[in-house]
Image (tube, rainbow, N blue to C red; front, side, top):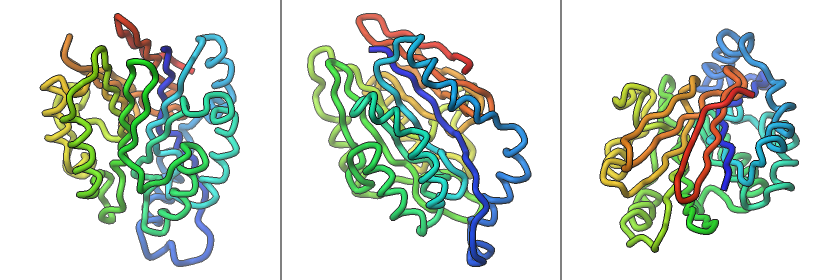
Amino acid sequence: MRILHFSDIHLGHWPVGFDWLFDKRLIGALNYRLTRRGSQDFGTLDRLPDVVESLGIEAVVCTGDLGSIGSPKEFSVVSSSFGWLHERFGERFMFVPGNHDYYTHLSVADLDEFCRRLNGFGLSSFPYERWFGDDHFILVNGSRPLGLFHSGGKLSSAQLMRLKAIIERPRREGERRIFVCHFPVYSPRGRGLGWPRRISCENQFREWCESGKIDIYLCGHLHKAYRYGKQGVFEQLCSGSLTMHGSAIVLDTGKETSSRIIEI
């Protein structure tokens, strides 16, 4: 199966009202206006259909950060932009939230509705499994509202418990585990991420990679695309930002798995 993996669109809309001036949305809105807005090319979204067609893409994975502050307006615009992906690929279009989607507790209801619209299930169903032949996708929501200057992630205890049960389960014959989470657990140099940006269970995820319980780890969060792994054990694929660097990953599964970074 040929998979297109992209992430970190960071659509931005200025909040309405005044209450956002007193919570984390102020940081997100300023960050978008001052650092991201001038460096983004949203034309990449318009070019996606041609890329899907020309490369013969059979499934699409998006690893989050579609917006900047988790606002209803952002989810509405993205839903319109991604409607064709859902219509074309159905269950083969898979989305997991990023920290900018699950930005504050005010984002939860709208994000849950957005997940149901595109994935067919809500936030409470994570981790979620999908099988396509031997390809076993494990979708993880690593995003929860954290501190004012914290851009990392955290799993609920219930989700982590369910996830452990999935990972520790004996493999089927030929099973290929593709773990999908917004947050990388390896930097480009193979180190962990710094405290403000990492997921709280980073060490657990790394142990699963190192022990061969995860074969492919798809993620975003860091905006420049890169690959890191150990041959014959695992590969982590960070697609970078689709709008800031025009990058995405093409992953081919089969008897011999291969991946490459592309520009859109």
